[in-house]
Length: 76
Image (cartoon, rainbow, N blue to C red; front, top):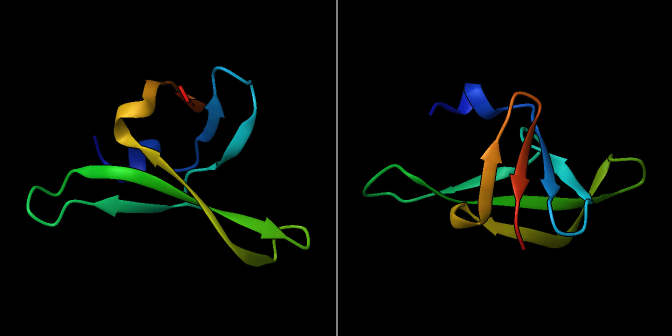
């Protein structure tokens, strides 16, 4: 799967139903040896999305349940 195929999708927690962010506003942690995605790193924004806070949420690739047309569903 290529980054352009998953970019722009909403990341939603299946268990709580909360929206965690949009891929494209997130960073990826990539394994240097294999090139595989290890996790999504979602920064927390304040001031209407203009400024990043120091807090980040890391979602491991194994937590992804389904990648659909519009969103990525993850399980806590």
